[in-house]
Each structure stands twice: as structure tokens, then as C-alpha cells.
Image (cartoon, rainbow, N blue to C red; front, side):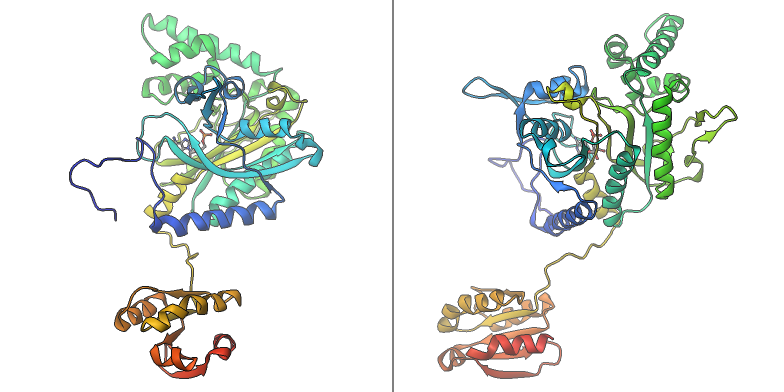
Length: 459
Ligand code: AMP
């Protein structure tokens, strides 16, 4: 669509950041509209945190050793010396706003949703940008009822579904709580240390070598082929959960099943941020869905949850993710607050919609097209349009185009059922021609009656 420019431009948008151009406008409008409708139908209220945040907010919440904090922050110093960053994600900002404005007083639980740009200093590639957009749902306060986890998953799922994307799959796991996670952490550490010792040499990628000493659970996040291979036999958390976490996870899965949301258990999904506990999930658009990937938890005789290791590869596009974050508000200086949330990557969703040829109809459809001929008519035409708009009639025009032929062509293209033709004669006589663009029939009506006449014909 866009023409390539020859030679170097004086200015370009920064690397990994792109303008949203007019031809994508209707798609973004559609997303906004669907988001609002889904949010309102589940009683989520809108929140828009600031784009810039204190740098320490993310160090404290995402974890100083997370990839986002370590490598991807757009940091700046203000003239006053404040260390700020362009927000890399929404949840920490919302928790900050929740504490700062005492939002817990608005209700418990409080359901919030947001949409806006996020910034991460990443290596740009297909579907990965430095400025991208997310929409998210958060439920803060109340207790840690699994119904809230299910409702966040449901809202995200419905949002994707409302955009006609098919074959969405939810990967889901639990990472336990303060009590059971340290035991699992140790098991992972022992497993990887054993592997490294047995290999007598370099086994893990450089990032994973570091993860081994600072945050072993993130070893499970690694996507490099060699590390993925080692991961295949790593211990899974499901059997090591405390009874509370086990019951909680079972509760979430039961709701998801009841809702008939397709999911797979992914024993190694950890979502590399510090603030998560218990439920974690991700949404994928499955480009080549195979039935064996729908492996669900089986109940063994002992009543333990078990799932077979699964194989989810590049045929899946990650559209979003989230999880429970019961400790985050407290980590940021607030009161103990149970919470769960999820976010969707809108740029990827838009890309997928375009690639799959999905047609979303949200285009402005004018009912009337105004054609003006001559100076006097042109002078009066803006005011005429306002009369129609004030009365709720959607109008289009090509003000400034002088030729009748060109205006008629545009009127046809607009697919409006009626055209108003306002020429020199009509302007002098205070009348206007209403033309039915389908039949070609036309009639001259007095100007003081034209709005009523247009509305009568549109009934
Ligand atoms: P995350 O919480 O990092 O898993 O992000 C949630 C969703 O946002 C992902 O599943 C992607 O769809 C989207 N996303 C994350 N990072 C980027 C990025 N750099 N560029 C485009 N989309 C992104």
C-alpha cells in the first residue's frame, strides 16, 4: 500500500515504532468499539494510567532480573532528575494507580480495563515492535476466587473472538504460591544443575546460565532450541502444589471447561515476571491446530492433576497473556490485595486480521452525499451539512472539488442512498435537489424543509 520513497528521508519514525495510517483507522476503531462492549458487558471500568512511570515501579514489580527490566526499558532522566521510563506494560501502572488513588474504596473487587501504547526496547521483527499496543482487563480486590481468573480469561477470549479470529487456544498453568513455589524452584535448580554438571561443559545459553543463579523458574521461559531440549524432562509443578493452589487451579480449569474455552495445560508456562503467582495463561492463534494439542488434565486415581508435556511451536502466534498477582499491590506499598489480569497485543491481532483476510465492517456509512456547484452554493454548503449532522444524519461530501462529474463519482463510491445537489440556481432560490442514487429520481425541495425531506426518504 505505502509507496517506497527513493533516497533518504529527512525524518523517519524511530526504529521499531510505526504510525497508524488512515487505511488502518477503521480496524483500530473496531477494536476500540469491541473492547468497550466486551468490557461493559462484564462490568469493567476504564482506566488510563500515565505513559511515563517511575523506573523503580517496574524494577520492583516485574523483577530487576526480568528481560523487560534488564534489557527493554526506555529510560530517561527529567530535567529535575527523576528517573522515568515509558511504560513497558499496564499491570504495574494500574496497581500503582490503584494504591495512589485509593481505588479500593470504589468497590471490591474492582474491575478495570485499559488500552494504549507500551514501549519495550526489543530487536524489531515480525510482530515485535518497540512501540506496540495492549488492551487489558484487571480484577483487583475481593478474594482469590478462581471465578475471577476465569472471568479475565473469558473477557480476553471474547475480545479476540469478537474480531472473528478463529482457533484461539489458551495455554494455562499454575506457578503456585509463596508456600509451594520455593520447593518447586529448588527442584528446577537441582534438575538444571545436574544437567550442567553431567554435560561437563557449556550446555545452557548465556541468558539461562544467568537465570540459573538469579531466577531458575525463568529457565523454563527460554526459547532457544538447546535449552528447550533440556526443558523437556524438567520437573513439572502440578504434582508439587500445596493443597490450596491445587484446589484453586482445579477451580479455574472447571470454569474454563464450563465455558467451553479451548485450552491446553502447559506445564512449563511461567511468564517471566516476578509479580505472578498461581494461575498464568497465554492466548495463541493456532495457525495449524492439531487435535492432539488439546491435551487436558487427567485425574489419576490419587486425584493428582497430570498433563502430558505439550508441543506448542511457531505455528502459534502469541496474542496475549496474564495471570494472578496476589502480592503485587503489597510489593508496591499497598495493602494485601488479591488480583488477576490479562493483556492482549493489539498490533499482532491487527496483523492477523489483515493476513487472514477477515473483513470487519465498522466503516462510516454516510446516508447522504452533498454535491455543490458554484461559489454561492459552496459558501452555504458547510452550514447545510451542519443542519443534517445536528439532526443525526450521517453525511459525506467532497468540499473543495469543483467538478460535478468528480463529485458524482465520489457520491457513488460512498454508497450513500441519497445525494443532495446544491447549485447556483438552488442557492439563489433557497432550494436543493434530493437525488435517489439508486433510481436516479430527483426532486427539488425548499431549503427550510430539506432536512425533514431527507429523513422521510431515509425511513
Ligand atoms: P506479554 O505480557 O509480554 O506476554 O505481552 C502480552 C502480549 O502483548 C503478547 O502476547 C503480544 O501479543 C503482545 N506483545 C508483547 N510484546 C510485544 C512487542 N514487542 N511487539 C508487539 N506485541 C507485543
